Image (tube, rainbow, N blue to C red; front, top):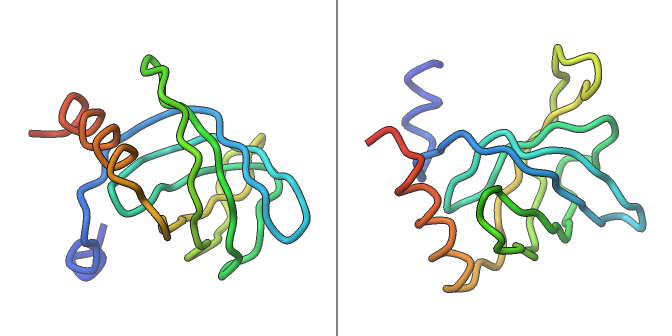
Length: 114
């Protein structure tokens, strides 16, 4: 990863995996979480909404039972080398409540690099 990309990131990211459902632009999408931060997440899927779309998303990160239901903005879209999930995207959480933030921090504290 290039230094400029590292400098641009505001939040630490940690690997995560979980199924995610998204709703945006009048359509439903499905994928899986790749990594997570307090600011957003990266995910892969077969079909995903366009960049700058606003989406409502629901996901869980096992083994935690907490169900996240968040609004986010699609910041970027790219192609993946994964033949089953050929698209990936990054989203920025637009409204992250304190309870959601606390659960993300708990997950990151137990799965981070520190």
